[in-house]
Image (tube, rainbow, N blue to C red):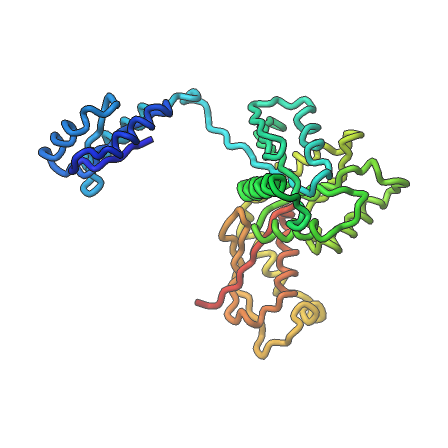
Length: 364
């Protein structure tokens, strides 16, 4: 903590109260005597605040920068050494497991961390709060976040229970925001309901990469070789998302495809940060320009007054993945043509579970 006081003024009672309160927290504190712009003010400030409960006070001036280097040195000295300087910093992949109550999120979470995983750290909270556990899998560090179930506002409880659930919802939404990859868990044997669609819309609004997990697959009777494909078509129809969203069918009872969830999360995380070579994008653009006349009429629903010109296609960003299509007359580019372009790009690189944005810009 950097405790800043006015070095040009006399010490106020509130300054001493704050200093004593900070002392009781037992946190490292560096006292900064600000506005000490010259030597006279500097010596006066040191004398004025000499009776404060700190071994060292750093005179400095935010106005002209005097003393800021000494202040930084004092701060660095207070930072505890928590790892070897030679050890590379490892940022874990943030994976949030979300879904409605009782769909098996915690069971999936427990199965994952219970299967020969090396648990690096465990941060338990209450049963209503997100539970974080960092695991190592396939040489990658993953922070698994088991969240409270999300349900509709009018189905929350009353009084204290409602307050707790609202706080749990806030915690879950915060976990979603900080997640690199979201695992959305649903029950395979249950029909899609409004809340499931609302969760998908919320993830798309936040531009989140996600994988769909249909849990309790063991409860589906009379499965055949086509059952999984039938379910995937059903989900794609009701959720209105494209076929690039991975769908995994799990059973925590029979231990089916449990670790496939982490495999998908790692793959999605890597795709979020993948740059396509420019020559591959040039190939996709040439294919789009050379569509057969019948195919071009189908994707270009409105016939432009002038010939459609597509100048260039460039990837400009990752996480989220973003491309820019340069077209002198952007209004002539139909949405269906953009969908075809996205499909062509995903044929070059699947970008599984990753949202993709293609912006059209004019000549300028």
